[in-house]
Length: 469
Image 1 (cartoon, helix red, strand yellow):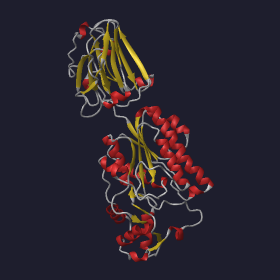
Image 2 (cartoon, one colour):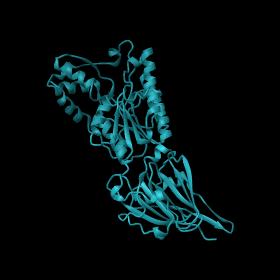
Image 3 (cartoon, rainbow, N blue to C red):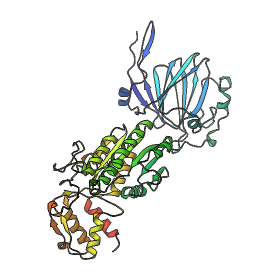
Image 4 (cartoon, rainbow, N blue to C red):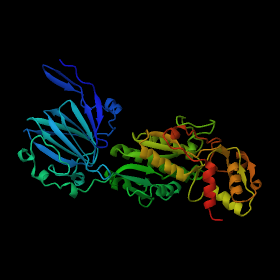
């Protein structure tokens, strides 16, 4: 008995199209092969594509030729019996459109075909069985999204071993358009929820150059209403960015606020995570330093949540829910500044009036400008960084709120000495939520992923200079 070859993977000229050499164990009884293994093949580059349906195409006669069909899902294909000549054409919009690859396959080979790559094959033996796993369920609606190419297209110029004039083909396959008549398959889209908030506004700017991002405010998609989940066409999307959140930290301590905080920050995120699992979506969720009690000098991604107040508890619960989605990015931020009402705007307005505020000087952290959270999100998605939790604040020296207030006064040309430091206990008012004393986030992981946040002082100067006098 011959020694079976080793499991290996090979790239091809078509982006994402991977060939696998499969060990086939044969003896006098026949053969056995491990056709698909999520763990070992994943280590060789096979995406964790989440197959939900297994199909088999049985072909009785040598010369049976099928395709080119580019389907709106990923496929993992192998041969169960016989041999085929396989051909693939990139029919996705983009610079790779029209790229061709072909090879012969037997039970010892398999191929991963990304969404939008046209798949075709010709049987070289009688009684050939062609099997494939797909990561979406077939439906008439899904079939309407297929992209086709004629098997005899002169541009693709596939060297079919058996001339097409002698092959067995369906009438439908013979009527597909040539390359010039193909409408390329568009990429899957990104959905942004909470698009009118501080982060949502920043995301609109960061993704302004793309026409594949859909922005929804609460009227367009209310994350607390299951009807919006039921009505959404999730097949169009690859990614959901959740910028919707309940952020009224002190109001969360009231009976009404407590319910609202949990509904938006935990319940809605749980619904999004279930949806991401069901439709193989990437879920991007934004968290907060409030999930910590602030006793650590610096907070790493692996620190266990220990929230002090209702708001922090609801955010910690949302983080746990979001992490259930296999493909998730949780971005943990601190002291967020963006469009709309925030601490920096308040201090700038007070400076403009020459006011002398009392500002807490025993809570420590760094500002996070919404534009940099948005830029980090685009970076993680665009580079395919490992899934998981990333701390994202601006870089630079650790400061207290009083330090930042003085910087704002200075940038406004007002005496920073007007800002009086006060302790948390002295500043506390009835009904206030407890705050973490230290909100400093370790930025090592996001930097290792290739995104280096600008220093907070640089962003603060730009922000204050952009405010009206």
